[in-house]
Length: 332
Length: 264
Image (cartoon, rainbow over all chains, first blue to last red; front, top):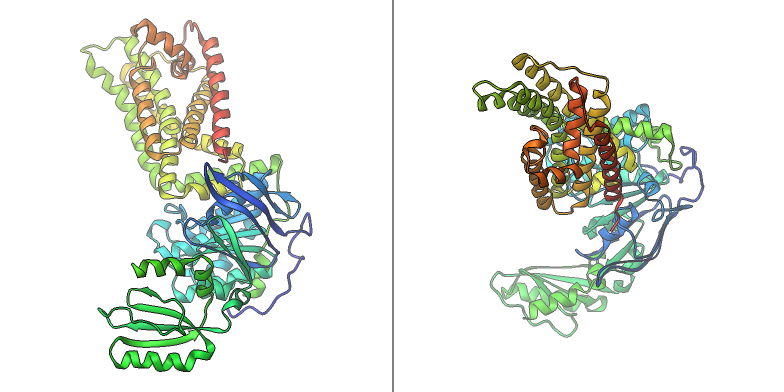
C-alpha cells in the first residue's frame, strides 16, 4: 500500500484483440426536445490516462456518460473505443466500459466479498481471477473488517468503496467513476486514488466525473470542463491555470454582520459567500493587498485574511461563469 | 501490493459473444438475483404459500358443503396465481424500486445481453412460484380429496404460464418510467387477474362480453392449460389456449426485450 512507482503502460497482461484502445468522442450532440444536453462535444482519452470531467449540475456530464455506456442514444456524433463503435454496439459498450454511478450500489443483501466477486464474474472474469482481485482490493482499500459483512449494515463511505471495487474488480478498458470519493474518509481516499492510478498504469482509461475540483487537480492527468452542454476547456490542470498564473487569490474572512468593504481598484470583482470574501489580484499588487487586508483586520472589518496562488477551482469558476453570477447575486 | 495488483488486474481484451459466454452470464445473473433477493426469499416464499394455501382453504368457507367442481376449479387455478404473482406483480415492482433508489442505471450498465437478463429473471420467478404452487396443490388434495391427474403436459403449461407472466411484468417494469405508475398498473393487474379473469372460476359464470374479452387476454388460457395438465377428462380448447398463450409469450418477450434495450 505504498506509493506506486511510475509504471509504463504495459500490453502484456492483456490478450487484446487490438492495440488501439483510445476512447474518442466526436462531435457528440444529444438533444432532449429543445434542450441541448451535449453540444458537439469532442474529446479523446488515451489508455493509461486519468481524465477528469468537470462541470456544474446539469452541465451534461451524466448525459455523456450514459451515452458511453449505452443507456442513451446520441442525436448525432460518435463514441468509439479503438475499433469498437460504442453507439452502434451497446453490448460492446457495456463490456468494455465499467461504471461506478454516483448513487449507492444495490448491495443491501450481498456480502461484501460476494458483491465484488459477482460483479467481476458478470464482467466476464474467471472465478479464480476475480477472487484474487477482490481479495487484493479489499486489502488495498483497508476493507478487511467488512469482508463478510452484509451491504445493508455498511456506512455510506464503506459502501462507496465496495461499489468502487465492484467497478474495478474486472475493469473495462474505460473505467467511469462518478464522484468515487463521496463519503469516503481521508485515509481511504488516498488508498482509492492509488487504485485509480494503478488502473491507469495498467492501460485503462479512467474517466473521472466530479464536482470536487481540488481533488481532481491532484488526481487527473488531463481534464475537460463542460458547461451548458459544451466542452469549454480541456487540458492539464497546470495549463488550465495558465491564464491565472500572474494572479493571486485574496481571501478575507469578514467579521459576522459586517457589510462588504469597498475594494481598492487593484482588486478584481469580489465574490462573497457567507462571510468569505474572495477577489483576484495581480502578483505585483501583493504587498499593497497585504497592507490593505491587514488594515481591514485591525479595524475589525475582517477577522483574518489569506493570500494564495490561484487554484484550479478559480479557473473552473471563471470558465463556468460562476464568478459573474455570484457577483450579480451578491450585488443584489 | 504492486505485484499482486499486476497479477490480478485484468481488463477485457475483446468483446465476448456466443453460446458459452451466454451460459456463463446466465448462471452468474441467476446467482446475482438470488443474492439480491436473499433477505426477501423467506418472506416471499411464506407469502406465496399463504396466498396459495389461503385460497385453497378459504374458498370452502363460502360453502356449507363445497361442491367438488368448485374445489377443483379453485385448486387448479391457484397454481396459476402463484406462478403469476412473482413475475407479473413482484417483478415490475422491483424494477420500480430500482428506479426509485437510483440503482436502475447501474443494473442496466451491467454487461449482460437482454436475452440473458430476461432468462435469468425468468428462472428466478419460476423458482419463486413453483414451490408454493406445489404446496397449494398438495393441501388441496388433502383437504378435498381431489381426483388430480398430473400429466407431463404440466411442464410446458407451467413454463409457459410463468414465462408469459414474467415477460409481461418485465416489459411493464422496463417500459414505464414512473415507479408510481408501475405500482398502479400492477395493482390493476392484481385486480383483473383475481376478480375479472376466469382463473379461479369457470368462464361460464362471467357476463358474455367479459368472457369474450378474456379470450383475448392470456390469463384464462393459462388456467386452461394448467388445469388440463392437472385433471383428466375432456379438455376442450386446450390447443387454442396454447396457441394464444404462445402468441402472448412471443409478444411479451419482444416487448420486454425492446423495453430493456430502449435508449431514449
